[in-house]
Length: 355
Image: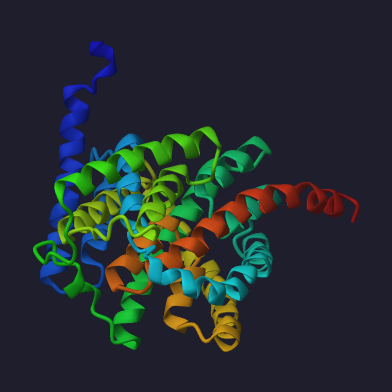
């Protein structure tokens, strides 16, 4: 049994990582910066990782926190939302053309500007599915590290820039909502136990069914079903949201461990270039959807943002911008990316070889 337990050194490295993440989050909170707990943890651990610091965040811990996040997001699916689902259908239908347009636009950038090889460029261009795109791209001959770093850098920049944009242009105050001492929600002991069991069961069932992003989708569906039934109306407390942000933010920062600073800088610059293109595509789609459905453009930006599903859902939760709509869009987007992007690769590759 002893070999299954983490070593003392690993525990110390984890404690250091979480300490850095918490300190970074607290600093950003004191400075009243947007989404402080996630961004502060992300920046602090990224700096430490690039500097060669012994930061580590086991995937198991991130997965556990994503399960908690899924349960929290499920609380946004209240009975009152049932009447609004019909308004979402045109927006959800736009995800397919959005994925095609976004992937092709980013692919052109990665091929002609970044000079990635075709396989690496293709799987680095998909708007989501970091783990799946990295594994599939590597199996087909692409550069796994470049694909993973490109996706990680894009998520890093999206998490950094979107809250700041909402702060400057949208008159939102994510820093104020992020106070862990502000009980934005409450939950009693019985609900805590029931939702915890549902979250674990949802994750296990989603894993068995091979659902993409099972750690978030399974618990969110399980928790959402309970909330939709009206059996509970429990909302997560502020400290739970803050802890989720610290762990998710630190996990993003740790992805840059062992990467030379010049490589990180190049990847960030190229990711910023591709993000500009993806943002133009996202803005165009959001304008079309907003004109058709009357949905708030600010919410649609979060729903279509080419960032991580967990990260954007946390941003929506922190900003108080309909996390149910945002989560539903990202769940479907990831599912479509995982299904469509690999399926479209072989025909595209064959067509390229015949030219």
